[in-house]
Image (cartoon, rainbow, N blue to C red; front, side, top):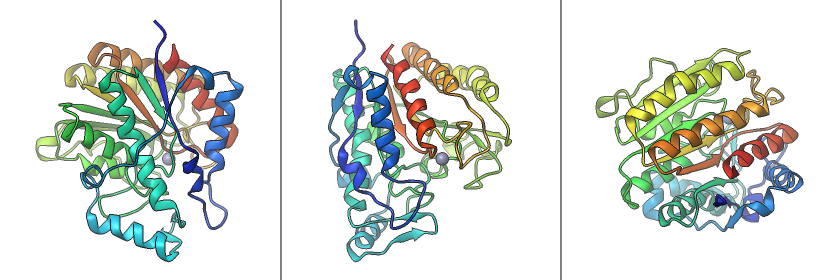
Length: 313
Ligand SMILES: [Zn+2]
């Protein structure tokens, strides 16, 4: 039977616009959409409109004072929440829709109307902390999805695999002492944001439910694939998640200007196959992949196409 793979996307995601030159701009999504059409994948996807995240979902991860701060910054024309992270007039509404894309996708998987989904969203999310915007991120889309699946959608255990080239500090901190959400990150290290040493393994009840694979500049396909094969897959067979979320950044690509890791598009395809094989065994194939980074536009478009092509197989 043909796989039903959702593409959760809205043109509204183009309305988070930087005040000046910035690597995280709307053209990233335009490049993805063009590539999916060029590669004849666009028509094979189930097109799903995201719903805005609710307050109760958003507040599972972010404090209400921080949410109000982002809203007020957009309303009053503040341009920066940290040296890297801008907001524009519509960014608050767009960021709520980006987080809602993930909860929308998870709901569709649980209802059984989709087998898997890719959320082509921005702003990205994995650096956003409970009380703080960071690293181009306003609300932590993946963390909100995982917490919503746990708190409101009846799932006991969620696994997050973060293959963005940067460590997902915000996601790790959201679930540091939580043994119901397993977080794994493979990233360049040392590198922005500075966290993600191998010794960071969780705390309290969550000890052992965080895994970090810091890799030196120059690492490539072999190191990423072996981290998954040797460590992550066996760990998932023990943890047995009910859902796998992927923080799918494509900035570890060879051509990306923000990193010194050199992944090929084939590696993104192979990692996707591994995630799907693992999900088939532990959670009826339920995978929701969520765009994080990726800043070389042609490489981003090609890498997302390679990823989505595997989801469709
Ligand atoms: Zn990144």
